[in-house]
Each structure stands twice: as C-alpha cells, then as structure tokens.
Image 1: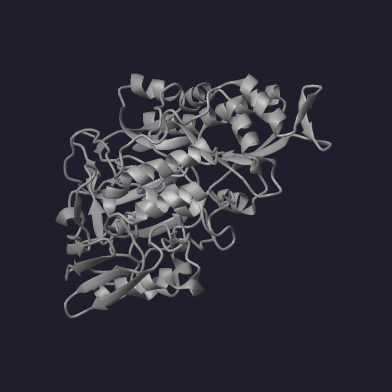
Image 2: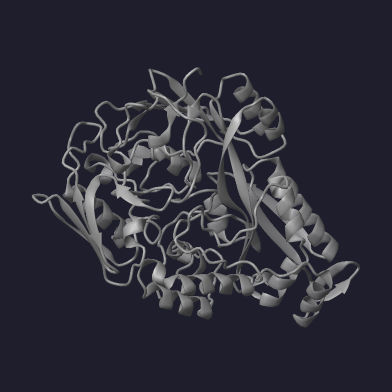
Length: 523
C-alpha cells in the first residue's frame, strides 16, 4: 500500500489540482501594454509553491512558475521546461530546454530540478507536496551535461509522468529558503510577482524573452500585467465587472443572471463542490458506519446540491477528480444512499441509539455533530449548509457548523474536532487522493478523517501495480468502496462560470491557463 503524505496542510479546496478539459471565451488578439484584473475570493496568505495547497494560490503561481511538462485540455502531454521525455511504470526521464531562465537570468539546470524533487521527498523537510505532487519512493538524478533529469520510483507510480505537470519548479536560489516566496516569486514562468498589498491585490508583471511555455508558446500576446484582486462578495464582483473595474470573475449565485443579461460572456469550469468527509476517529460518533449512513440517509442530497449550485450543478461521476480525468468510468452513481429518514432511524436504533423528545441519545449523550464548511464559496453554499443542518435537526441530531477560510481550513480539518466536513477535494489523478483516505494521520499525514478501509487499500494496491489508465477499473472500484462505506460521498459538481470582459482564456480545472490569456480587440 502506498505511503501517504507527511504534509502538515490539507489540500482541500475547490479546483485545487487539475489537468483536464476547459473552454475558451471569445477569440483573442495580441496584448498591447494592458492590465487584466482577475477576482479572487480571499487573500491566500501564502504563495510559496513549496508549501501552499490553496486553490487560487496554486492558480496564481502558474503565472510565475513552470513545470516539466504540461497537460492540454484534451489530455495531450506537451512540453514545459522539458522538450523531450520518456517514461514507464517506475521511471521518467526529461531532457530540459537549454534556454529556460530564472527571474535573475540564471539558467535552470537539470541538477536544480532534481534538487527540488529530492528536497520534497526528504523526510527531514516534511513537505506537504510529498504524496500529492511527488509520489512516495521517488528519487531524482541529474546529468547537467546531457540536460536530463530522471525520476525513479521504488514502488509503482502509475501516473508519474502526468503528475509532473503539477509541480511548480522553484529556482535554486530560493529552494533552501523558500519561506521568502510567501509574497515574492522566483521561478521561470511568464510573469514575476511585482507587488503584494495584503488583503487587497497581487500584481504580476510580464517577463521579457519568455519562449518556453506549453508546447513552446511565448508570452508576447499576453497582457503586460495581471492583477489578482481580492473581492469576497459576489454582488461586489458583479458590480465591478459591470463597471469595468474587473475583467474576470467567477460568480455562481443569483448575480450571474444580471451579468448574463448585460451580455457578459462566461467560460465554464466543472469542479467538485458537494463533498462530505467523515471523521472516523474512535472518540467520534461517526466512527460507527451505521451512524454515518444514517446521517447521509437523513439528507436529501439532491435538494442540497441544487441549492448549493443554484440548480445549475451536475451529478459527479468521480470522487474529487476535476475536469478531464484519466479514468472516466462512473464511481458514484448507484452508490450514494437514498434519502430515506425511516431507514436512517432504523440504522440508528441498530447502532444502539434511542430517540426521545425528538433527539437521539446513547449512553446518556445526545447525538451531536460538528461540521466545518468552506465559508468563502458564496451565499448559495451557505444556504445549502443551512438546509443540511435543518434536515439533520429534524431527524434528531444537534448540529454546529463552522465556516473556514483559506488560512483556517487546514488547521481545523487537521485538528480533528469535527464529525463530518463539507470539504471538496480536487485532484487530477486518482492516486493523488490516497493521502486523505489512508495512511498516517495528522500531524504526520493528511488522513485527517482517520480512515482505515481495508478493501479500499486492497483495490488501490491492485490499481497501483498497473501503468497509467490500465488500472482504471480498480481505481473506480476503490472510489466506489469509499462511498459505499460512507467514508466520503460526493453529490454535486459545480459548473462555475468565469465571467469575462475584453479577454479570452482557457480553464482546465485549475483556473485560468496563463498561456491562453489574451486581449480581445475592441475592449
């Protein structure tokens, strides 16, 4: 069984990792000294690519940092800082371009790339990227003269090549002192981070001479400046779009209607949104599978999902996988428990609970559950959470809820003082989800729900022994096992519209693709 991450931060955020299919808004022309302003829901507080796992932080970092290879929206693998590559089930070798330069003008060498991979897998560094962006058991070697980096895995790593598109490469001057990258940049990407005003905005300035983008694209047609503006309220975002003070913003709530009526076009991104994770630590009532199933059957998940998405969501087919998954089989349909309060009550009685005065109790203690949820995802999600609370209270549970932010999400989940969490996890390959559902618990790992599902682990072991998509039947069965045992459930995906004025761009599940961002004539 693959060893899980030792990281101290949980990658639980909307659209966190992605390499899939997206769309383009409207046709674009060349940038000519312009500035594009993109809304983000809150200050990510940390842009260090060696530590951050917040969704919009990783999206912003794509503007300053490159990866070895890139995955196109149609699933094709194209060049990054590597111009050639070969791979098998346990290794991958990359030949780097010779013209790749860091912000200080120094070349990025094969040894620099190998050093970053080895830094992440070194136990002494306790990297949160280990097990997520770099598989366990990987070691890196370099040949600077040949310009090659080789990744070797001591255990099966079926998505080793594809996964290298997720790691943002840091230049050597900052590798050993990456804390300074919280609010600065030091990469080879098309932009550099030039200004940070905490809580307000982040300004990225285009680098001259950048020619090593995805599939060899340069940044000559890109805007000169990209500003990420912190705007938490969707109505405010909409007003700023309508007044021309924002160029790109995601709006999921009722304000989208007036943006559409004003003729503002949108590009749609599909992301996991409705996902419930259970805490199965021995001291939690949710350690009992019957209680978990009862709590799920007490909910009308279809109704809650409709409220969370304004009726514009889609039924998910995978657990936490974003757009364009390598495995396309359905692991969800038929495995979610139906809305059946009578069956839920029967499960509670079977588990030794009794109902009196409208409340369930056992051994003198009332059924009480605590649920953190992402508080920055808009009013629709808050309404959906409130509906879930109402349905649980009607069933006979006492419920407390706790909104989380980018800075509090990981500490709360890792702290374990909750029974279940509304916490959508977004990944690009099924192996990336393993640290959350197996292996070490915090603080050594990301298994914050204390899961120990032997059948899931058996199926994952079988899947890991097969290269790339050959293991998809086992990956699908493993995800289904988590849902059947009520370890985790996913019940709605959001179809998030990114409204845009004056620009065209693509989305791939990880936000705006920098190389696709172009100005439209007549703006």
